[in-house]
Image 1 (cartoon, rainbow, N blue to C red):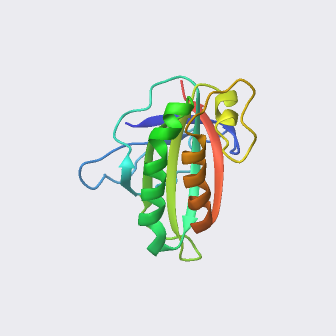
Image 2: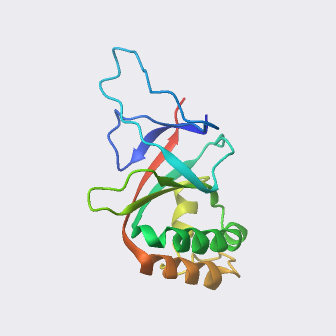
Image 3: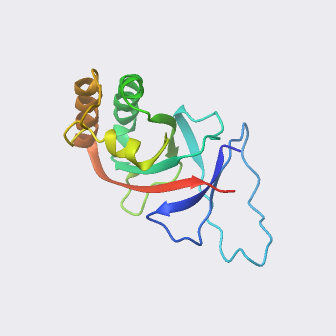
Length: 167
């Protein structure tokens, strides 16, 4: 199990998100509980990282990227190149990057990135498009910020929800 999350921002409080890794095709979900009123299953292929369980307490962003299918490799390469510099400068830790096996209704590729932050202040401090936080030391900010700006140029859309580990 990669993780089980409860929503903090952007989703109904009645939603639980569970992500598991499988070395083969996963079995069909068969949840049985009177508290469960619906189940949505999606299959993803790992593009980068994504094999280590999420166990730290804090905030986890689930950022969804939509891009043209032919741009998935560039999206992955740009992101993976930016991560080491970002992780050096901030408390962000990228958990993984996954491609949804199904295209959305517009035919776009959908990529999920999960990032851990110890708190929402750490998330805010990693926004490359905002002024650097007072007192922050981010010597690589131009590197990762520039790469994220390049990434933004190939996106068709993006949104984020914020979660915590479910207890």
